[in-house]
Amino acid sequence: MKIATWNVNSLTVRLEHVLEWMESAEPDILALQEIKQTNDMFPADAFKEIGYHAISNGQKTYNGVALISKQKPKNNLTEFSDYDDSQSRILISDIGNVRIMNLYVPNGQSVESDKYIYKLSWLKALIKHIKSEQEKYKDIIILGDFNIAPEDRDVYDPEKWGEEVLCSPKERQALSKITGLGFYVPENIVSNDDLSKLMETS
Image (cartoon, rainbow, N blue to C red; front, top):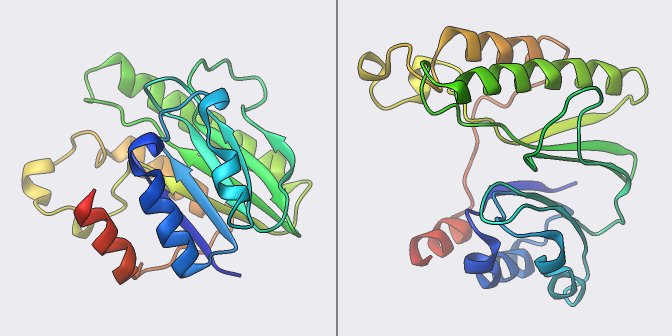
């Protein structure tokens, strides 16, 4: 199974790039983040024309996530249980025999901000939800934009970033708790050359 994830930073702007890449790469599943569209504006028909099912959890101007797949997504969730969130950041579905969790984790802005507190509370709710999913599903894939640099080697200037947002100990601890639930994390992500070329022109 070929699975891809892409923070598209406005699907309205990059729809043609996404469609072109999908026809070339033919992924089984594509998870998108930051589609920046409401559900009524989501171009599901454009994906249907190239042989895919498509669903979204959209939001005007900000956030929004989508799942595009050859098999129809089922048992869809767009929010964590027992967590009130007005932002559209999750889309969880059964695709085939796999539970797919597409996430757009909050950025956090700065460690002194309310947005950082929101990020930490969101991550706490995520961890709780993953545990509940594990009680029901054997095969789970978590992907998306985590807005967390796992290690110093993942940023261009670790000394400058220090313990700022994206690198702070509390964020990294939350990410470690997620991986500690039994998830395998690839050490090297190989970018698709065709995708890189498309991004250069966007």
